[in-house]
Length: 365
Ligand SMILES: Cc1ncc(COP(=O)(O)O)c(C=O)c1O
Image (tube, rainbow, N blue to C red; front, side, top):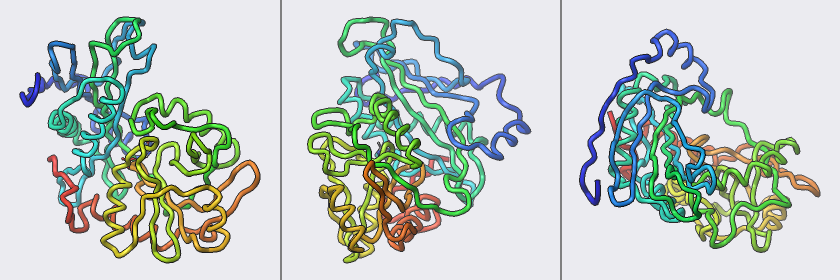
């Protein structure tokens, strides 16, 4: 396929699909990322041929040559988004076109081919259609979709590969917060940074997460939930968490988030929050926030709330901040009113319970 040609998906239903009873047992408490549906999507790419062989087939291990380029030079990107079952039985996704655009941007940074946005969105729709029984019921449950692409060419030379495999898998997910939204404790990493200017921070490539793991392990060891990365040049300014963007709420109703300068992931939740906040009368600013100011403004009370945001948990209040020399609370360690209000507003739009004024919600079934 090239340009705007439409790619047809060959559907091969899984002959050994999980029984309804076993599926119900798995969906009762799926947790996150451990239970998978019966099918996957695969599409191949070869230089000179373009995208071809689009399939919906039984989820199965992917045979891989030990010299497949991804295993050596990590040419790999991914996305993450959710499909929801609405109260009237429809199935929706939140801004899948934004994930498609970010997938294209990530591919560009990693010297990989672009998957057309319409093929990306159609691949998600195909998987959700065949595995729709796997979408869990319940107010906070969803089917997490994981599209990804990697260099499959069998070649050890260091250059962009000529062959790729695009794949989508799906994993039912239960409520992120069981028993109410609880503020998290974050660890500000003194030693490790996530992404330098000119690096891959804005791309959703597996390598960014590989480098974050040692810092996240340090956070867990320090009794924290998540790591916060500072900028790689001055080690002064807050970039983002290992897997979430960050927002600061000040007592004059200003909402501040670090700017998209290429070192942080341009979160789709971040973007939606900036829009909703501006509409609710908050002043929004995309500007650097130093860790020193974070600490000083939390102490003076000028900084009222801090929260993290992303697809997984939508909005998570940050109550406590730890670093090697000490720790401090934000807003007394309790979730703040702006955090709660933005969370409620966004979740209601995502769930089809509030008016979708921006055309963010896509009904796919
Ligand atoms: C490093 C990082 N930052 C931010 C986000 C939030 O992005 P989004 O709101 O698109 O899920 C994610 C999650 O995808 C992430 O992995």
